Amino acid sequence: MTASERRDLRNGLLFTSPWILGATVFLVGPILFSLYASFCDYSVLRRPEWIGLSNYTDLMSDEVFWKALANTLVFASLSIPIGLVVSLGLAFLLNTGVRGMTVFRTIFFLPSLVPMVALAIIWLWIFNGENGVLNYFVTSAFGLLGLKVTPPGWLTDPAWSKPALVMMSAWTVGHAIVIYLASLQDVPVHLYEAAELDGASYLQRLRYVTIPSISPVILFNLIMGIIGTLQTFAVPYVISPSGAPARSIYFLAMYLYDNAFPYLRMGYACAMAWILFILILLLTLLALKVSSRHVHYGGM
Image (tube, rainbow, N blue to C red; front, side, top):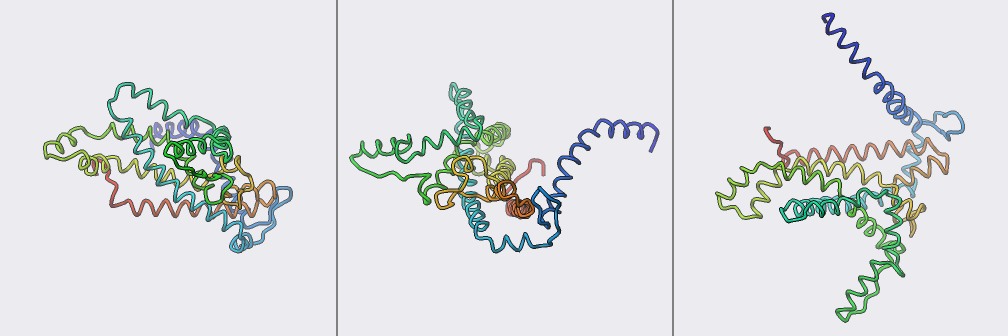
């Protein structure tokens, strides 16, 4: 290494040292400590005491843990595909050349700017089973057809509570729409022109040109959906910290939080966090493996 290269390396390390120091102290350090704490009886108020795999074996026989995990997976299996379809469909609509499209794009993105707590409070009012807006419109719509229906209690009915949360999550797809819009506008025009010369219909151009061209973006939004949905916390916790009714909306992140802070079982919560991390990692690797034959990268 020449003197100039050593000087560049020294200056580079000097300028990046604040980030390296911050990442080590506030990111890598806590991650490693949480792994250690997951093998300890640790309540935050006293020193960790090594207990081996006890936290993990206790989780295997914890009914609440399995209930929270099942709720999380069911919610993710509904929310992720619906979110992908809704965001992609809206992106197609917002990618047309209709006059005033900028206003429509702004309208659809605005819900994503609403804080999660405020969003939960708004939807609590919308889903109110007695005087909520949604049930009012449902009753009125069927009334116009001469039918009398009894709308569900939504957040007070275990059968409808998770679908209600899925509807809420579909409300905040603005960021995914923006990413899809950018990718749709980046599809090479000559591919569409070639398809039109070959007599391809709109659906054929969609299937053979548009979808393959934006497939890396679809995969990206899928992985972001897996990571975000499995860590769902704020909205259900504001709606019902106990996961009522019948713990139907009690998710894994909520049980993790309850163990870490209200119950002061930090070691137990750390074990749960690592299980959640491994679950997200496995699902992400599965998505990458399954999509390897269906995702097309330009120039590859």
